[in-house]
Length: 463
Image 1 (cartoon, helix red, strand yellow):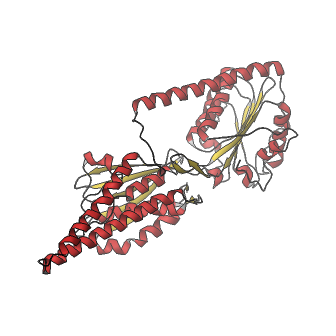
Image 2 (cartoon, rainbow, N blue to C red):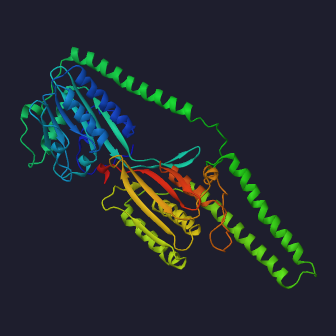
Image 3 (tube, helix red, strand yellow):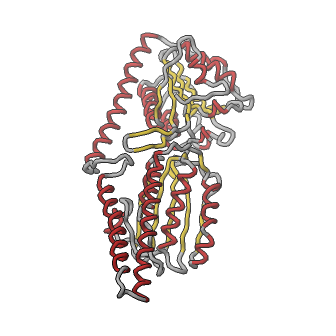
C-alpha cells in the first residue's frame, strides 16, 4: 500500500478505527463502476436519501451525478468542489422540480484533495464508498518493467456508526465559505433488515456491471486476436532476436569483405578510399546498433516516475533542435496549451520519446519542410494527446505496420548515408507502453507523417 499522509483525512479516519476498514487497490474504471451501481440502486428503489459526493470533475463522473439528480428521488445532494472548479450549478440542473444540489468545499487540506467519496444516508439504507488517489509506482512484469499509473486505495462500509463518524469529520472540515448545511444531514441511521436486502441487490448490480464489462472485453479480444509470440527478457518478440542476428551479421560481413579487398595490392586510389568509407560506415552502423540495444536493456533499470507538465519540458527539447532544423532549412515549432494536465512518466523516458521522434522527422523532411509538436487534453482531461507531425517523404501504407518492429529503415532525404539501426521507434514504443500509453502513426507518401501518442493524464486530485 502506497499511502503517505501528513494531514488528517477521511481515509485515515477509517484506518484509525478499533477495527480498521480493509482497503483494496483499484483503478478509476473500477471505482466508477461501483459508483454507478450505487446510483442505479438509488434510482431503481427511489430511495429518499441524503447524498454526499466528491468525485473527479470530469464528464464520466459528472454524468453519474446528473443521472441521480434527473431520475432519482434523493432529498438533497451535497457536492464537494474545489476553489478552481467551484461551480456545480454550471453543469447540473437546479430547477425547483429537481433534487437540489448544495455545493460545499473543504478548508485547505492536501490529503482531502486526493480523496473521492460517495456517501448515502437514509432511514432504510446507508453506504460509504471512499477512495484516496495514490501515486503510480514501478512494477515488474514478465514482459518487462511497467510504470503503474495513479491508482485508488479504496474502502467501503454499510455500518451506520462508521458512516456517522465520517460525516462528523466532514462537518468539521467544511470551509466557512460554504453554504449553511442543517446538522441533521450529518447524521446516519439505518434499518438493519432493509439494509441487508438492499446490500444484496447492490452486490447483484456490481456483479452485473462486471459481467457486462467482461463480455465487452471478450468480444474485443475475439475481434482483435493476434497469435501469441514468445517474448524475451526485454519483453520483445522472438522475431526481434532473429532480426537482431541478421543485423549484427550484415555489417560484419561487409567489413570483412572490404578489409579483404583492401589487402589486394591491385586496389589503389579512389577504389581504396571507397572501401575505407564502407568500413567506416559499417562501423558507425554497428555502433548505433549496440547503442540502441543498450538503451533497450536500460528499460529494466529502476527509474522514478514524475508528474511532467508538457509546457515545461517540450519547449526545452524543441529548442535544442532549432540549430539543426535551421541548418536543414526546416521550420520547427510546438504548441502546448497552458494548464494542460500533467502525465506520469520518468523525465528521462519522455525526453527520449520526443528526441527520437524529432530526430526521425528531421531526418526525413526535405528543406522548406515543417516539423511540429503539439499537445492537447482529450476526453475531458482524462488523457493527453501528443502529435509529432512533419511534411517529410512519408511512409507507404504497406510499411506502416513494420516501423515499430525493430530495424526498420528507409532512405533519408539528404545525401547523407543513414547509419541508424532502426531501433529508435522500437524504443519509443516500449517506453510509451510502459507508461500505459499508446502510439500510432498515419502517413502519406510525399506529404508527411504524424505520430500520435496518447497517455493517461494525472488526476487533478494529485496535482
